[in-house]
Length: 469
Ligand SMILES: *Cc1c(COP(=O)(O)O)cnc(C)c1O
Image (tube, rainbow, N blue to C red; front, side, top):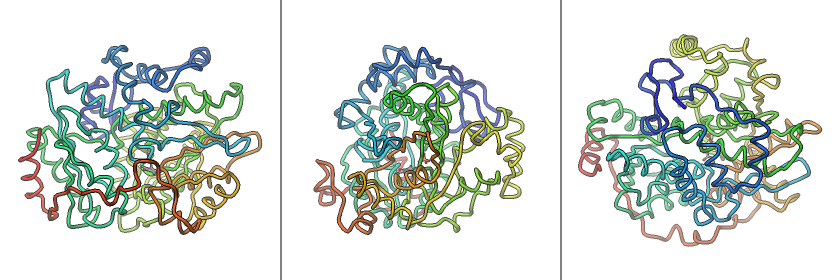
């Protein structure tokens, strides 16, 4: 399996090359040259597999440069009950007869990002060891990505993490989760500024090609193809766990920010998994809902981003969306380049001619959005009717599932975080704090470690240069 860029300006890469490189050098996103196909018979033969074995089966179709026996070892180390709390890894539970919740948030940081990031930690360590290289991961976080990356890279050989976060602005839980880590390869950098300052600093460092090459800087944001590939696995897992006849209409409801999670669902469907529809759920930041309703894609200026009670979905543009548009244009890199040029020049593009292909009759993507009031209402309803607590992001997905589902359609809602991460909203909805998983009771009282820096490029570069692997 070889990888190409959505913009056509990259020679073919292997999986490992794409893993270490992140973004394609032409600014495009890395995608497989074609989607591997899984026929009905193969799919049935996977029924008895545990999560790690299923991960090997799905991933080896994307990875030709890691021997299957090594991949087996990496997936077994990643998807273990020690890391994800149960042998099931991603338990599926029924809410009603045709509504299910897929538990993806039982990893160390209580959000679904661990499902991919934990594998990335193993893959990085393995690839760097084989190549005799080291890597310094530089990132900015407003919450979930940073802690997920740090827990995945914790103690990994040849990898260091430099994670920028706004000095104030993280929730106490999120701050404690990152800053309580005390490991020689993890550097928490609190910036005297807001999230945008952190992101601007990361961009400015990455744009200095000499510095980037000298200190071997890498990225773990969701544009990394390996994260999408790892997420494809749980769509297969959910479908197999449902154990329904192949002609049953099975859809997924996916809380969406950067379009990474739902992009993995699109890939699973392209591989032949019988998915009826993929329901894109947004919050008040409805760039993607607008697209799937009108065919107009209009990223917002950052000043127009709403700060909502599902903050991990507060985005102004969806970085993974380019992967989907590439498929929508028949995988024509030249047309994609033209279109993205127009997007830069005019601030929006009109793909309404392609809406029929994107939607229910084609790729199966449909959408809706939620408000704060909707989320509170869903959190209450789920607690009352099904004795389950869900976080506000998962509530976005359930709201959309209930709104869009049709008679005869089964919908799997992806749980993207545990309610313990978003205490304030749960208290507002239910009048009491959500339960904390074992081991997290004293999180905020643990000693915290971080270095405080001004939002200044020179100081940041000096900091990295003194500590890089
Ligand atoms: C990252 C995140 C999302 C959005 O996922 P994308 O892959 O960016 O669409 C939704 N919910 C939670 C809790 C997250 O951390």
